Amino acid sequence: MTATTTEPTHIPTPAGTASFATTTFTTAGRTVRKMLRTPQVLGIAVVQSIVFLLMFRYVLGGAIGVTGVHYVDFLVPGFVISGLLFTAGGASVAVAEDAASGLYDRLKSLPISDWAVMAGRGIADALLMFLVALITTGVGFIVGFSMHTTAPKVLLALGLLVVYALTVACIFVWLGLVSGNAQAAQGLSILAVPFSFISSAFVPIATMPGPVQAFAKVQPLTFWVNSWRGLLLGDPVTRTFAHSLEYYILGGLIWAAVLTLVFSPLALRTYRKR
Image 1 (cartoon, rainbow, N blue to C red):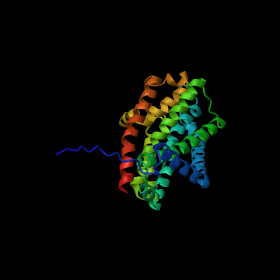
Image 2 (spheres, rainbow, N blue to C red):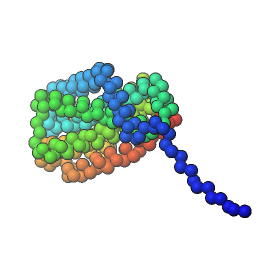
Image 3 (tube, rainbow, N blue to C red):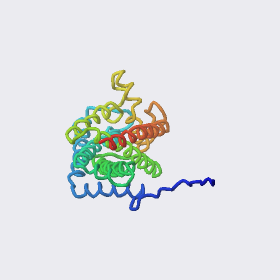
Image 4 (cartoon, helix red, strand yellow):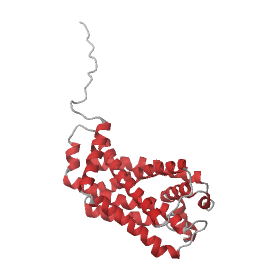
């Protein structure tokens, strides 16, 4: 009696399955095209950002004093970075609307990577945040903001802005998915307010009460704001920091990595369960 050995059968990838990269950029492209077809999405985000910047600059700015730099120079970097959260709040509403429309149900029925779908959505939302941040910075120059830095530091600041936008996108994609509907997503976006104001974005942390200071010093937005502010303003502002500029850059990157590693799987899990 002769024994026969059965070789493991390799199961080929189903015909028509898109690669991870193709799915990611197709999903991102679809989201970007939707934004372009509804320009009010970008318009509202830009107008909201400009209005609040002008209010802080001309209404509240006169009552706030900072050491080493003019308040407008202190304000603009903090406003741009904290503005990522407010722009992302609108993006989370769009995620909830897509989920309610059945788009993600249709995508899950296709032989494509769920990770890639989430990555594409996050990239598109990060692009929206990046554009709004650049426009807000441009308006900042119009109202008196000036940089004291070098070209390499500006490029590093832009690179960090991309990293921070991608991180915030991960968080708010998850919020949009877990909220269940657009109204709830809009409500959850209020989380941007305490994190923005209990940070170094708008006023020096030293002016806050003790327990509030303790939170503000360690939360991610403070690291992101101080790294951006230090890169754009240089020694006049870094001399006022409790730590070195390198400390805030490295800490900001660590926070970005931790938050991405936490919220990306949460977003994927929520997407699969819907």
